[in-house]
Image (cartoon, rainbow, N blue to C red; front, side, top):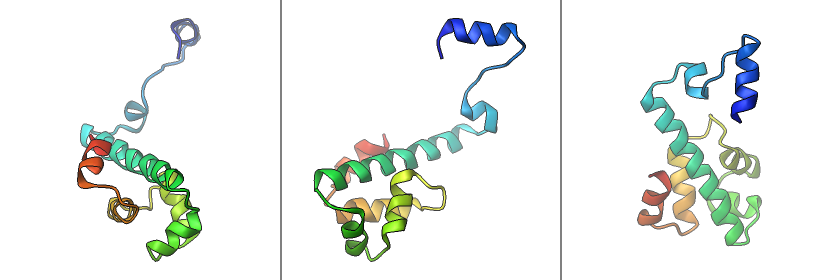
Length: 102
């Protein structure tokens, strides 16, 4: 948000802050959420680079297309385990996964 807009909101009594502040997340919780989102983004990018549909990826990991869509959208019901398994199934190396989460 630009400074002018932030100042205008403050003048009207509004408080601005981060999502972490709003949700009262600890540093560990913020890191966990960011890690899951990074893995989700990487999954979609790798699937698209390999020119696979969500259905094709779902078949490869023995899941459903709707689950793959949730994985790529960063749905909170998706585990990090499933994201990692899927990335490995697409051929991601441990080094690439390390870069993704760092």
